Image (cartoon, rainbow, N blue to C red; front, side):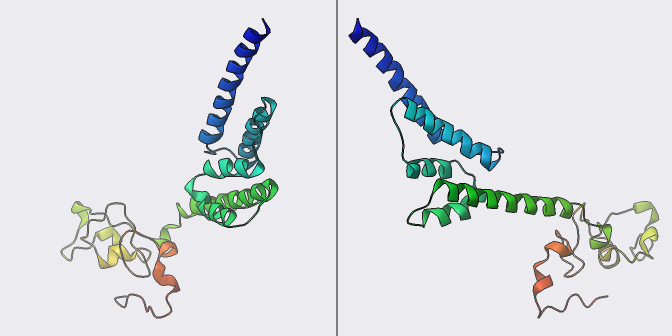
Amino acid sequence: MWSVLTQILSNKSKARVLQLRGLLQTTKKGATHVDEYVLKMQCLADALMVVGQAISDDDLIMYILGGLGSEYESVVVNLTSKDSVTLQEVQFMLQSQELRLEQQHALFALDLHPPTVNYASVTKNESSTSSSGYSAHNRGSQCGRGDRFYPNRNTGNRPICQLCNKLGHVVLKCYKRFDLSFHGDTRS
């Protein structure tokens, strides 16, 4: 009777170990916060310890790092290049990166709706176009360089940079704004 009971429990125990190890390998951080993700991974490691299959902190760290997305690549490279690192250090560095990513996301969200003075979309208005090709309602416009310099250019909703006059980006994203040798467009 004991041997049958032991065999039944060991089969369930082996299945549970395989399940927990599989979860450790496949769990991804996704949209969850770092704290929640690390806690979930620690709970899986603790559950393994309960069934008699404890894993080392180094293995747990590797599972944690393996479940991160590409936005954490710099942290993963930094942590894996060190000789030894604690779980607390890993969590701290991941939290720092998460905070940095949230700050960048907030700045990007603000940049999605820049003031209209930063760019102008060129639209064709066939009914009010004069013989010069300029739209009648845009003749006095001082905001958009696109409507003054490229009146017949069909750009759709793509912005024109006010610094370099290239299509597809705004001044805030223009790589020329930090180029000290760049003198800008001289056609104004």
